[in-house]
Image (tube, rainbow, N blue to C red; front, side, top):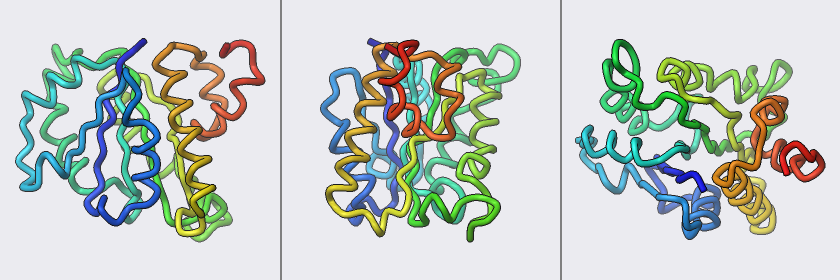
Length: 204
């Protein structure tokens, strides 16, 4: 099993429903390390060496966060700026993250229908994540579609439970290596992939 580093970046986690449900469904998976950035670094004083050592020890990296004003919370941007150093994560000699898998688990208040050319938010979620995708590409990481929980204000406990079950299932499948990148990349979200994975023998 590949180990997964789940990096939670939620500035108001105590008020969260969706991110808490996702985390609760995954936190006891034996191959997963939960790493709460806001809890560990309330002063934003990030320990770069510690964070880099954590990354080295894991094969799959998940950034889990709510989308705020079309971007991740400030802590995650601070983390990227400090930890993904030139010469370590990219650039000359910066190969420490090469080949590792990167994905985002994103929650939005807006529904999936509100994201896209005809929607209120004008762009699809994956289009809004392009700068993060390029960051992963710069570090020679393997980028996967995001796991997305959208319309969070409209989801009841049963809806959140369904999303959380999909999330833990996706993490388990990735950790076990039961997937083909070509199949995953045919889907706009990881949710869509895991829902269809059982129907495609290439991922069994």
